[in-house]
Image: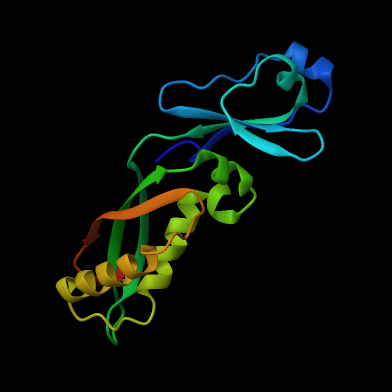
Length: 177
């Protein structure tokens, strides 16, 4: 996937003259606008506030809320006691179920860089498997990833394994092929 996911844009207007000069953020199709309102206690609201509430906006975020956004991750798994590796490609389907929770936890590594986070999940699930063939590795990895994704690893985002593809083993040194 190219681009930013799940937070597409985030803006923190520190001075009102800066807010007046810039175009306000607007949510397009498949997007939600989440605003942080200041005051006695900071509150996140979904949608664009109007009137007196609009003057209390401290930050505005645009969140992608499309269903089943595909994100690909790749890694290599070492074959059992050899110089060969199995190329593994996984596709995850991600859906934001609570945009306010996503914006609240926007500083978390998983939210800031979803691609790298899912790459790390795939690598962690693939370590320690002495793979002999593609089919057994695919079954083992599918089970490990489904267990790992069963909970909610990222607040406000539902992640599901869409596909897992294990290619035949190839030598680690391209000169040996």
